[in-house]
Image 1 (spheres, rainbow, N blue to C red):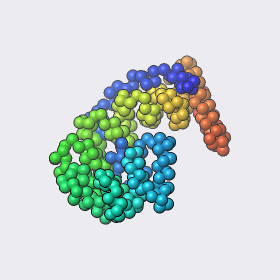
Image 2: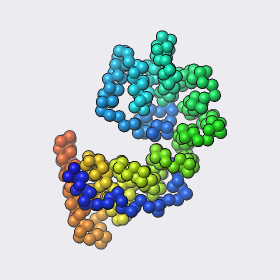
Image 3: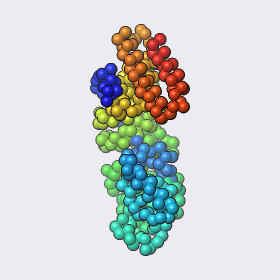
Image 4: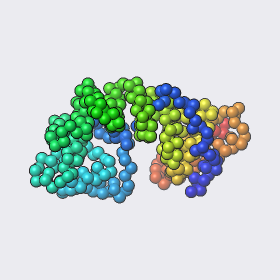
Length: 358
């Protein structure tokens, strides 16, 4: 707690610096990241698609690992495992596809699922698309279609199946027809954006997200997705605007402060570096002093701001004090968790201190 107060006192008002204005608000900025899961592409695992998994507690993670091991060893518990995955919004597609199909292929096991049967069919269908077992996925979708004809939810699965198959035109046709019936279906809009990304058409993805956010401005996963796309296109100012929206909505989220600080550091310039340092400090404070990326960021900003003509003695003293504070925390963490790297880290931090004091 003392560490956090130190960063807060060094740069008070770091989350209210006045930099959250609308200076980057352009026609392009009103564009749109799972849960970013909806932006994932069928036929790819969560790790491959770069999606961020839902937050899972330590106890839940242990229970999930225990059930997965039990299932893999043939000890049963498949139904409980699938239910826990749904609750935690996890995929584990390979395991789900393998053992979920085995479950559904046994009439006696299906009969015990009760009302969860169709939820399991949907879960297994998505898992099969992730691992590109398209024939098995199609059987699951057909079973759902037979039970729920003309269902929007089943229609989305059909579109995702065409996506996984690479039949973009057919998938687009399915989504367009469904949107005609329900223009406010956010999942369908996001699936179209995912298709544009899958085809490498980032311009269409940005335009789609811009249009989407004109209607669904409170979708903060979409703002994060847009920030990621802008960053990949090297459009850092537009990406920074997206993070400003995220920080305004979630001022206590350390990751948003960190992302914004990294963008400002990348853009460069003495003013942006000063602001980046404030947001790195805010990320440190909000994370209880445990965010290593933000701690390194403070050191990097201090070194990059080595412009004597642009700073006074007071600022220089504050910069050196903050760098020393951040460096001491970094060294403490490495001594406790990675002592073999202490020498390397020490030399890097010493270099940053020298640049800041030059």
